[in-house]
Length: 492
Ligand SMILES: Nc1nc2c(ncn2[C@@H]2O[C@H](COP(=O)(O)OP(=O)(O)OP(=O)(O)O)[C@@H](O)[C@H]2O)c(=O)[nH]1
Ligand SMILES: [Mg+2]
Image (tube, rainbow, N blue to C red; front, side, top):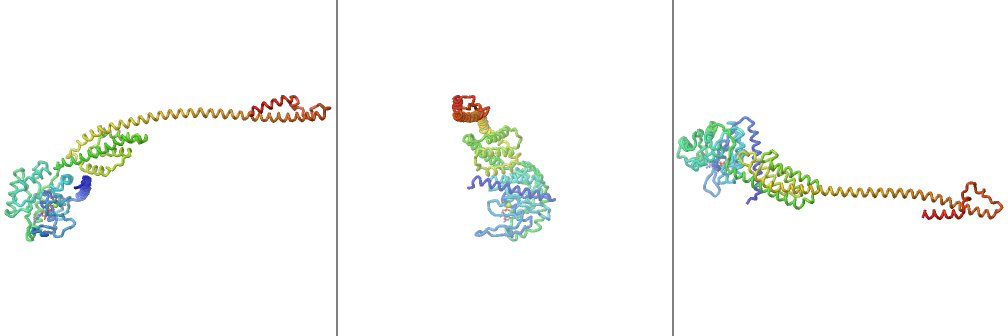
């Protein structure tokens, strides 16, 4: 069984291919040519007719281990030829183009409707059909296969083709060329066409004028008789008689499936993102720094604008912006987003499909998704706001605390400065005292010396020999000693 994500990757590839084809188609359209497109249900013989009209050669082959013979290309794998195959699986998965010089016509072999490949492939094919046919008027060739004279499934196949391509307007269908493929031989071409016209008149007012018949090719003789140059020219003539049709985009089958695919995928991605975001906010918000929290708040603010539809965006841009914001939130919260590839693929599919917004009612998704986000994310915005307020409060407290410490430091510094000044003046005083002490010591010494001299020369009781200004002579030795002791005490 194909995993869901693998399936989405297949859709992604289809979209890439379709986009490429549309670019090629645009390039070819710029040359002055007409466009004819082969459409119809799978296995009706569109590719066979495409190859025949484009001039490729055929052969009748016998299948290995089987009795039955089948029509095949004479030289398989030619560059512009379209693959044809027996069996129930449809072969043509994407349009093939071949520019037919003789008719100056770009012939397109379009993938078959009612594909067995699934609803989504059919939806993409329908979108491609819409995109091609609105670009330029196109001649439509509806290939119908029946082995008897009756329109297949009582003409329901044609009617659903009309509904698919033209809405219910059968008058437009009358401009379509019908190629009746593999009809049996019991009626000649003319009578067969009359019969078919009669059947068509039962559900449409104006019958198709341009009807061609290709008989079943059973053997080499049929090949020669039917797939020859004259018949090729004849069928081209019928095609060229029909009017190119300018299409308006129409609804197509399976669009509900396509809308559901987008919706379900979108919903599951959103649910997942929302629950991851909520869980991470619950568990890790407190670990974030202020800058991250502010960035987070900004994202939630934009989400709120989106939810309240204050940004004027179409459905796709709305989802794109929303998913971007949510993924950025996830990144800020430290969540390793392993959904990125899946989201990118989804956005690619959504973008492709959203161009058909008129047809696929995507707008309703907006309402549902808005509700989911409203109920979950806006609450988280409040949580973040509370966290921001708490941080601000804490910052204010911290600031006050810092101011207090700063003031204390300032006071302490002033005290230190004062102490330094005190110490300096004390040191100065100390130096002074030391000087004084030295002087006093000198005096004491002088005094002592004087006394000794006095003993030797008592007859000369004068102190002139020691200088006239000498203070010691005026102080008693005892008082000098007392002063010295005092100063020593201070210095200590
Ligand atoms: N014997 C015979 N086989 C035919 C004839 N016309 C178509 N076929 C076969 O019918 C099968 C389907 O034809 P295709 O041309 O591949 O059909 P288709 O409409 O392109 O189918 P999708 O690509 O699936 O949409 C092929 O095997 C053809 O060879 C015919 O006139 N005679
Ligand atoms: Mg085909």
